[in-house]
Amino acid sequence: MVATVTFNKLLSEAKPGVGEVVSHYTNDSIGGKLMAMGILPGSQVELVRRAPFGGGWYIKVDNLYIALRMEEASSVVLK
Image 1 (cartoon, rainbow, N blue to C red):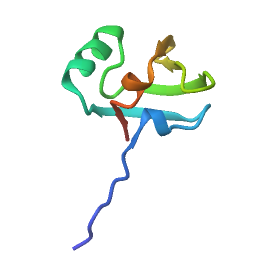
Image 2: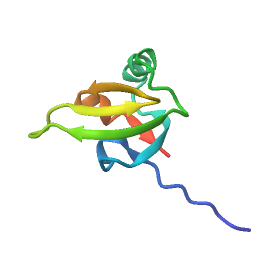
Image 3: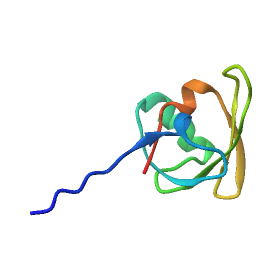
Image 4: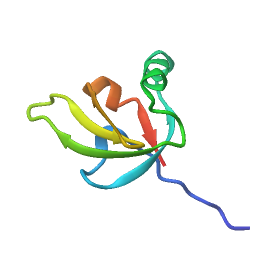
């Protein structure tokens, strides 16, 4: 029997320019807000840049550019 290990990481830990897929959310209330903005499970997401000093996150989701706060970026789990 072979065990499969998946390493999920948060969007707040992503490297700029690397495309990832949204798996799920850690916070349901923020997850509902993110889904309304178009950040759906299964969507391709890429971190474009981070603002200095813990500011906003600028991401690209399925050819849509969105700015997120740190709390929102920390609730998105990537595959």
